[in-house]
Figure 1 (cartoon, rainbow, N blue to C red):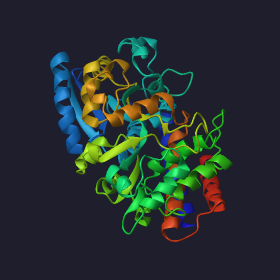
Figure 2: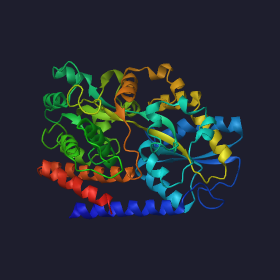
Figure 3: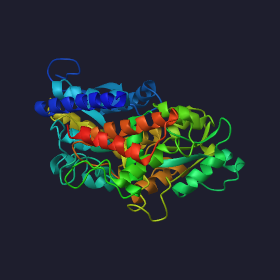
Figure 4: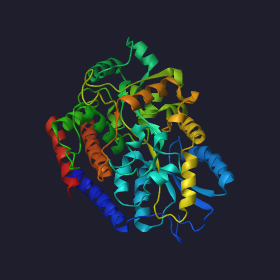
Length: 439
């Protein structure tokens, strides 16, 4: 009952917020109020927390924004917003009309926010002002809005999930290479789990991370969380297998620490960097690992294992992860916002910012820089190109992340408390999540 009430409250809050956004039919800055912009030579920019801290982001972005001001005469007021509050801030801004001119969004939210009508569509005319759609990688553009519609945002930073592994721990356990299949991952994980050291770290307390892994493994099991009409199908056999397989890292296989059921905010990255766990499933973790004292030569990166060679939908190994840059349609400085978008997606800025954050430029011509030829980024670039899929680009995608992510979080909590996680209990949780989607 406790979990059911919590999930209902989350869903009701999100649904109400989305309804308010739709009713507002737009956003952008106003002439008055917090976050407003009534100066044609000024822009307000909400940046997502890409670095190791808010201070790190400000250090990275401030000199670049000064360069933009020097080039255009337009001052940019910067606010860096943590991920755990960014979506709520965006929804509040679009419903109130008091928001920034330009903002970062998780690319998985593109279709959900597009459906509100608040974001500027990147039609051919607007795309031409940033050099055209052909500058961006197809996988990144596929996660910029609903199919058959103009993109709702521009790709800014591209990411992909990979399997990070501790080279010394693998060597000490007599493991010569990273696992290629899920069975091999579990087998290796058991060899690596000894005393207070575990085979793998998970972020079980983070609904977004949970939803991402449910999607990736769901694809490997042939599951889609929405059908072609956008109707949710969270409790399909493939989806149930996917979620159970992920939770079983802690529940049945016992290769992840029980405490990981509560982990959030990159706590699993910290544990991996400190040698408490030998493997980690994460997206572009290099910068975070460095900040936690782990050197690049101490770990390797491989594609996330599949069920078996050639299984699933092209052996999907990652979602198309990343951050997009959006413009509020009702901004009173559309010219300045378009100039800023062009600046942030220019080859120079793409090389500079993605190199700082350890991500991959979605602008094809910027990828040739040596900074993106590191062993880990080569693997992630290959994954993005050949074996990744965008999360469902449907209006209810953000609710999917909340509901399926929280259902998985609850199952992790059950496992950590010693309660049995079964196919039936997974199906029950996902069925409840699906029912909440329809309310």
